Structures are given as C-alpha cells and as structure tokens.
Image (tube, rainbow, N blue to C red; front, side, top):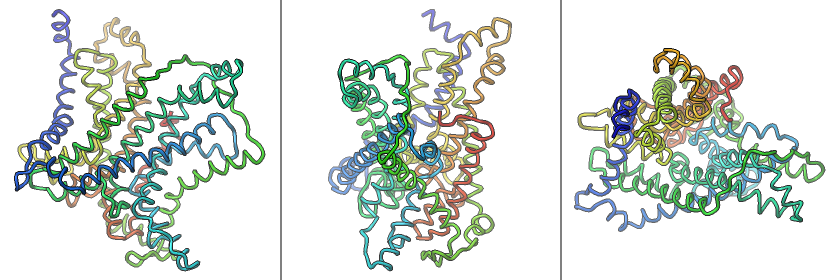
Length: 550
C-alpha cells in the first residue's frame, strides 16, 4: 500500500499514465475494434465474418497459400542468408567489402519498387522476356504467381536473416569450438554440435521476422499475386469493398492475420525454450583467407547474390530515363520527360511524402524517447505495460493497422477521414517500435548514477533529464530518426488503406502507376523516392558518422 501511495505521488507515474492513455487510444482501441467487429459484425443476410470465411473456399485457400508462401520464402531466405553470414564472418574472399552494404540495399529499396523492377525485367513485357522471345524465339514461363512471389520476396527479405545470423556468429566464443576439437571432434561436427545450437535462436528470430513480413506483405502480393489468393490481398479488397458499411470480412481477415503471427510467435518461443544457451563474451573466430578454386566459387556465389540484390536499383535508374509510349517501354531510347513530369508537372506525391513522413518522424521520435525513458529509467507499476504495448505494431501488418485506424477514426466523433492526419497517424503507429527500441538500447548503457548525481546537486529531475540524459541519447535518437524516416517514407500497406484523393504519397502513386502499366513514370517516381530515402542515410553515415546498422 505504501508503495502504491509513493508511486501516485511521483510525477513519472502520472506521465506514464498519460503515455499509456495515448497508446490505448491510438493502438489498443483500433486493435480491439478489429477483434470485436470480427465477432459482432454481420452482413445483410445476418452472417458473421467467420461463417463467411468457413463457407467460402477462397478464404481458406488464401490462408493456406499465405502459410505456404511464408514458409517457402523463409526457407529460401534462410538458405541464402545463413551461408552468406557464415562465409562473411569466418572467411576473407574477393568482393567481401561489397557484402557490407547489404543492410543499406535492403533499407533503401521499398517493396513496391522491388516488385516493379523485377516485372520490368521478367514480366510479360520485360526486357529479358522480350529478348528471349524476339531474339531466340523462346517463351519463358509467366513471372506472375508463385515464381515471382518467391523470387522477389526472397531477395527482399534474405538480408534480415543474414544480418541476424552474422551478429550471432561474430558473437560466438570460438574457444568452445576449439575445446570440442581438442577432444577429438572434427571441425564440421564441432560446428554442428556447438555453434549451431548457440546461433539457432538468432536464426529463428530472424526467420520469424521474415515470416511475419511475408504474411503481412501487401505490395508484392498485390502486384505479382495474379490469380493466387493471399490473405493480405483479400484483406485489402475487403476493406475497399466494405468502405462505408459494416466491416464484416475486413475485420475477420485482419483478425486471422493477427492470429497467424501470434501462432508462429508462440511456436518459435516454444522451440527456443527447449534448448537455451548462454555464453559470456569470449574470443571471436579469426578470419581466414580463401584461395584457389574454392575462393573463386564462394566469391562468385556471394557476388551473384549481390548483383541480384542490386538489380532493382539498376533497373529503376534505367527505366526512369527510358522513353515509353503508354505501357510499352522503348528500351534504348532515352528521355528526361519522365522526371520532368515528376518534379515539375505532378510533384504533389513528392511533397506529400516529405511533409507527412517528416511530421510523423518528429512526433514518433519525441514520443518514443519519452516512452523509452520511462520504461528503462523510471520503472513503476505501469511501465511494463508501456513496454508490451509499444511492441504490438511489430506483430501487426500495415494493412491491419490501416483497417483498425480507419474503423476507429474514419467516422463518428473522431472522424479524420479525408485528411492527411490519418496517414500521419498510420505512419506513427506502425514505426513506433523503431524509436522505442533504439532509445532503450542507449538508456540501458547509461548508469543511473549520472542522473542521480545531477539531482543530488539540486538540479530538478526534469532539468536533469534534459541537460544530462538527453544529450547522451542524441546519437541514438538521431539514428532512430533516420531509420524511422527511411521506413516511413516508403510505407504503403497502411497508407493505401487510409489515404483519400489528393493525399497520395510516392509509394501510393507508384502503386497506382504500376497497376495502370505505366512503368516509365513509376520508375521516375521510384528514383525520386530512393533519393529521398538515401539522402538522410548518407548524410547520417558519412557526415555525422552515425552507426545505423550497428
């Protein structure tokens, strides 16, 4: 009782309550609206969404296809990411320095651009498809459907597994492996029995991230899915068709998406809990040089992955300056008319993206800095809930977040429909965990004694935070701001649900042009989008020396 009374007297408790109230209104309320509508909403015939889902084989096929796609992409991404991470961590080979830019490539290429540029190469009118058809008389299989989905998503997401596995292998104490070998175990077997179990949690965590991103992927699924039913596509279509009516199917399909992610998270935690390993920081494995045919083969494989990863950027740059007549690209004929249209005739999507993403980044970083400070440094009865709630967007796809916000703030007393506020809100909610996790990682490394010393010298707690703690957090806050900006300005799946005419952003405009077959104009907008994303990253890493990928 005394502890409760003491907590109520603390201003930090009331500030935690205010932050918790904001999360409850803009995050918990929309999610609860989705869950409740999936149970309570009825169509004109009085049927619930679950009755319609179980009765229509199309929805069941979509769930099965989504699970198959998630498993397939995760498996393929693991097969690429894990060997590449081991090769990079343990060996020195020609072209290794280029592999270090993989995180940057993954960050700056939005999913909608990745799908678009692969279509420009291997689509029905793609440059490679036309070369095979016109030059060699070959008719390659359609890139739409499973081939395109598996290819594009694998090369979009494998770097996440690469990054997670690389960090785990570099942190592994090689002395454990050497001890096993000194007892007679062969090097391959020692790696299998000693290193693999230790790094497996990192691989599983990265694989889970990839699976959840595939389940929630909207852009690639919508552009390349063709006649394959997928959960994210049907959820978007239900949201569009049910606009202004009871959210029967959109809430049911959104709840199904949430359930799939939660189920996978539970399975992953169960697998990891069966074998937990903890090691102290030891000596990392020495990097050995590879020579001869083996080195050339390994370097060739790594560089092939790099070239395929760079393919979207190269294709985008060429397409932006290629003359086109409607949907027909005239490869080899150059023009600047596409960029003139983007920058002079129709710059509204560019300006909208910069303004909306800028406002969302500022608000999200300020809010996440305060939330992380309360969670790490001012623990009370409410801060565990702050930690849990701030992580919820990680388990929600952009489509689900957009539907929840539209159901909650698209009508009634809090009607934000038809305004840019709903887009900014969707940006903030979706990218909130970026700021919270970055700021928290720095605060955990700051000893409490620094702030306590300031308070003991008579400086008020708030002033101590502003003058002592906040300046030490500036590098982490700046890094979080850059990462939040780069992911916000390329966001599509949530904003395409909540946007209204006149508020199109760059990803939305690119998506609409791809749907119309106007690839040259889409490439021009895409090139501008890449520039808008890349400029702050280069400024942060080259000028201010921020470690965005540490």
